[in-house]
Image 1 (cartoon, rainbow, N blue to C red):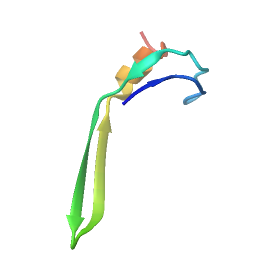
Image 2: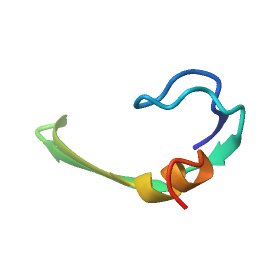
Image 3: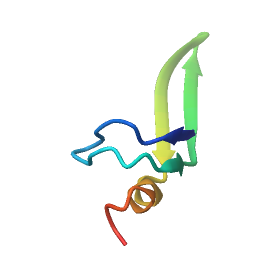
Length: 54
């Protein structure tokens, strides 16, 4: 995901920083319908890019 931090996020005021977050999504289907989804993303990397942590 690519974007610009323009609005408040988890209590952080907008920084106007450009951000890039990587992640993966796995979906399990049963009889043609999605029944489960697992999502992993780099939240630590996002917080670093926003200056919330060193």
